[in-house]
Length: 56
Image (tube, rainbow, N blue to C red; front, side):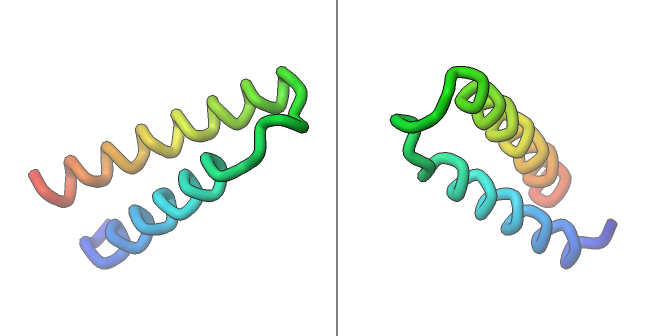
């Protein structure tokens, strides 16, 4: 993966994280909240790994 593609993926992951964090949790079930939290954690891990590769 080249740097341009990595930066594009990083921006995409950060946009997805923002999208999921801005969801209203008041109308969600417990299972939906857990699923969203797991997805956010996964995206944060991917973004962290990309940042480490890009800026290391």
